[in-house]
Length: 355
Ligand code: CP3
Image (cartoon, rainbow, N blue to C red; front, side):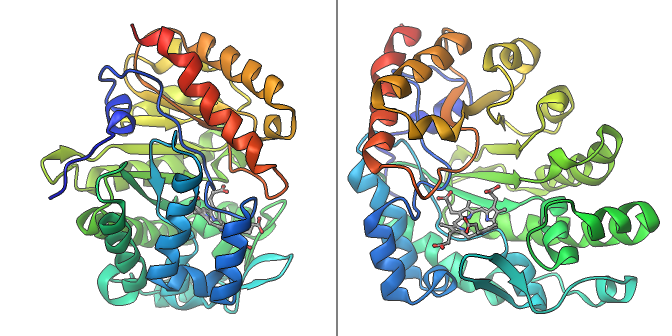
């Protein structure tokens, strides 16, 4: 077992003292990097890249090699690998986002869905985790991840991305029992998948609830948060002699932070619509916070990026319990130099809050 040379990300998630605020970025391995585009071209397409552990490892490490400030690596994969392993047939149409060959539209479809076994059915992801851990060699911790049951359900019922979630919300209200049966299956699948990643070497895990914020407050509790809670309850919480922290990220979840803080997760991801100082006052006694710069700030010049980093650090204030991140993934059009200015600013400007 290699020693972790930089553990400030894991320490901040547990609210233990750190020297500077740790930083990583959602989608840090992605199309804004020319070296990513080159490796993707070598693989052929995005899914082939995900399914090749050596190449998935290569792109995971690219942002770390370019930006020495990064305090964590995130597994290169996708949340839709789970529905793919349930037999839906994931593919990506260039410029159109993800699509499924089969959609889930009836109770019989739900009944027929298998719960994938991580090593047998998602072995390429487990192999990627093992390869990345080996190549990281203790540089920084590795984050594993999954989609939330509700977020995965929207893709499975809509057959792909959606603006209004017409079919999934119709199912939720027309036949809540069917939606619950689907979410129950997904919660079991996600629990096994994340535990597989933890056993393979993931040192923290994040649950991406990208579409929980589209729900009413009542529906959020019943159809999204309740299932994420079940997952947290079923996760391996201690591995290789260390706590394995869980980060819950509901995009648009700012109204429900108190409820999320009761989920058992160590940390909550915040999008940019809430003030991180207010969030800390509401739930900072219970959980760490991750976020929350508007990804669009990275279109601005480095001085403006630095000013926004300073503002967010000041709003969080002194002490540990903050992992700096964007409020959602970086977009492909961002200049890589601007991402670098962002990471530098976080480390340089945060030391004063950790004395
Ligand atoms: O953060 C990381 O660097 C880890 C890798 C990662 C990807 N997808 C790589 C990816 C993670 C954590 C995800 C999660 C994911 N995937 C989410 C939840 C997070 C969020 O953004 O809210 C969702 C909803 C998906 C589904 C998905 N995958 C969509 C909608 C798309 C197309 C979007 C687009 O911009 O075209 C993807 C493809 C995808 N996943 C890419 C990457 C780097 C782009 C693929 C490419 O063309 O190379």
